[in-house]
Amino acid sequence: MKYKSPKITADGAVFKDGKILLVKRKNDPFRGKWALPGGFVEYGEKTEDAVVREVFEETNLKTKIIDLVGVYSNPDRDPRGHTITVVYLLEVVSGDLCGGDDAMDAKFFELDMLPVLSFDHDIVIKDLVRRKK
Image (cartoon, rainbow, N blue to C red):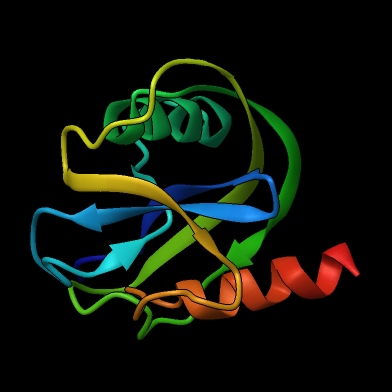
């Protein structure tokens, strides 16, 4: 019997002046849609290292972890298959914002003017907003 297991990703929530950082996806699924920056955890890599690496690759921003936001594990959250994401709140340390790697673009959005989001990132952002209150 072959054992199936979910893939693990790490996503970063970065705020600046009350706005949240999103990236425009370059690849499917959700090509051309916006998402929190993040991606797959590599074998042997900690989720904490993965989120900092992925956010840098997609936005050119060096960040540090402030807090754990949560773990999102709905088996239907990613059309490629069961994927669990660990979401961290990050703070920018340095860098000039620009889209890179898997991102066509990267920019900050007002929380009340968000574009259509990929995956379950609308739920993640609602959780973040609720937490900030």
